[in-house]
Length: 83
Image (cartoon, rainbow, N blue to C red; front, side):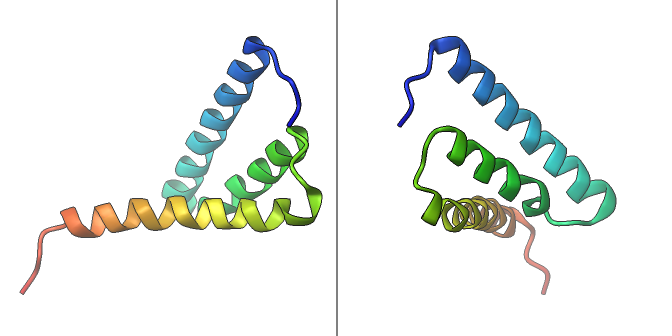
């Protein structure tokens, strides 16, 4: 993994948060999946941090799917049960 300064890591985190907000807005306004934004951003982030390129795309897709499934399971559990 690459050696990053605290400032570089903070900028990376802020960028990821901005991408998550953009993905949420696109998903809410246009009805597209958030993965259309998050997967390329996660792939770019993994290649930036010198993650092995042969598995970076697989990990980006898996990370996006895991985040979506965790969020959806909480929403489904909290939704009122209709008879």
